[in-house]
Image (cartoon, rainbow, N blue to C red; front, side, top):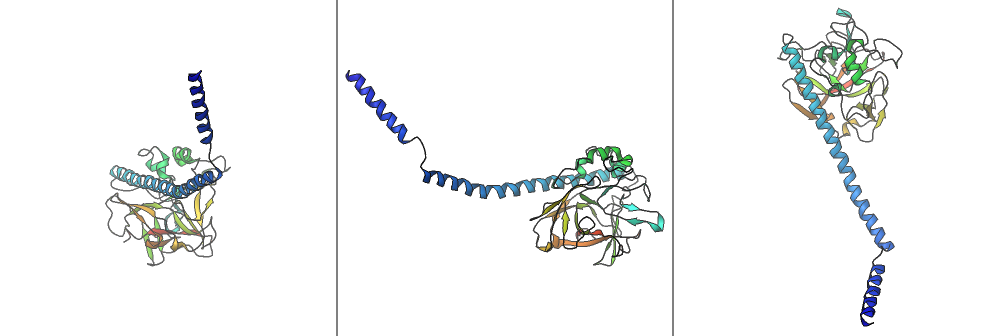
Length: 304
């Protein structure tokens, strides 16, 4: 009897202890929730920055690979880079279009192929290398278009020989107009460089006064911008970020790759405007009364 009484007393005490430590008070719950909220407010922006930095590194690796592929092409083609597909017309009537072109509208122009992949698909199988990972959404037609090359025909658009715009600016054998210098921009023509050629090969898309934005006060980019909106993709164009004025206040860093293979980052204050030219030599921009093709902001580094 005495032993059972002792056991019963211990059991009662244990139950009372468990009952007393069973849950949290309301105050304790509020404290825990507050701590979790504070931690999330610290961690979420940090994770966002880490993710953006990872995308930027991935994008810079893409650019470096594009430069490598161009040099491989040039080694097989007498040190010459491919023709730019961002041109239309022939001889003195040739005009230029956006340097983001991956596939031209038609097969006219001083080129063998109307698609970038027509030149480079033997050296680059995965189209993802030609696409900025920071872009708001993947472009669902990208790999199919890369594999189709000059024969690309997007059935969702209902037309034949469709063009295609990407998320990088491709500057090899490209001509543009630099209004600040009142002179042409001359993209690299070969792996050796020199002369009037810029050493800038590829950069992030960074554009104002674009026909898909219709406003000088907006900036479009493949890199995520603070307080930005998304311009949705179309069958012909990838999606990108856009935001309103005060572009010089944007702290986002952008990237460009150069002939020697190095990739560097730059801010908007370290860019110079380049307009799409309506002459083969890049000597003049399109007249302002025509639909704007955009003013592209390119890094000053590498300019002659």
